[in-house]
Length: 315
Image 1 (cartoon, rainbow, N blue to C red):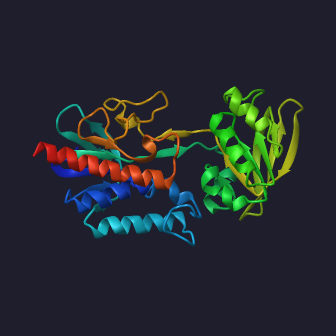
Image 2 (tube, rainbow, N blue to C red; image 1 turned 30 degrees about the vertical axis):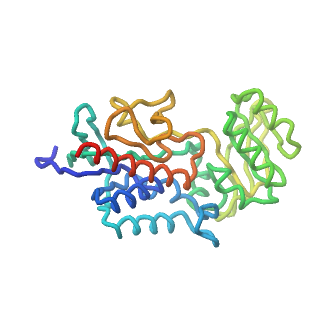
Image 3 (cartoon, rainbow, N blue to C red; image 1 turned 135 degrees about the vertical axis):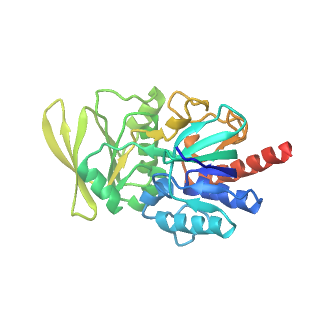
């Protein structure tokens, strides 16, 4: 543990659109925010090659480029942006204690949690290769489906989100092949029925992904196995979407912050307030519905404004 304790007015844990937007607003309000970028500086958007649905970018922008611009904007107003991630917190008292990299101890008047959520992937080496290449693997149909217009794609998943994303893709793509590992959907009956009734969605039950196939740069097919027939098959596709869920990055807060059954932070409706006074949440750490850069940025603004009002009320 550190021998010295740093005291800050506003500590922002995590970056991405939520964290950086919170920093912009907090800095402009003279809250002198300190922001730790986390284990993935810039958040999930850094794995997105093209962003075309964020207002203000008529020609689109890459995810990493947008995050650099947001970070620089936050710095311009005085945000202290640092490398490192929170490894422990203690929100039991009036002083919010946070440890960074298990060594630096910070006492914060207000804390904004913007640690986000991590998409779950199958973990196949080929999947990870094309994810890193930006060449055809995605965990967000709403974000990336536009790039596969009139093409054939594959989506993996069996829950409501998978059905919703498959249905969304069916409006853009020539054909959507949906891979379900078991004999049944986990989705609600109404969602499962919706994809079954969609003509250009082919559902393959008891089917598991073996490999994402491509030319090294972009995806060209997906190799699967029918577990019932024990037969392998190659499905032509330019896009491979994974819809098997997200895991919110909230484990270190569990002893103090109220979480739902899947780990998302429960905020007071219409605000960014958590159950702990002076601790606020922004972005995907609390959002399991929209999960978009623009909504994350909006809640980052809310968190900074809520934190500013909290401090003003204490003066």
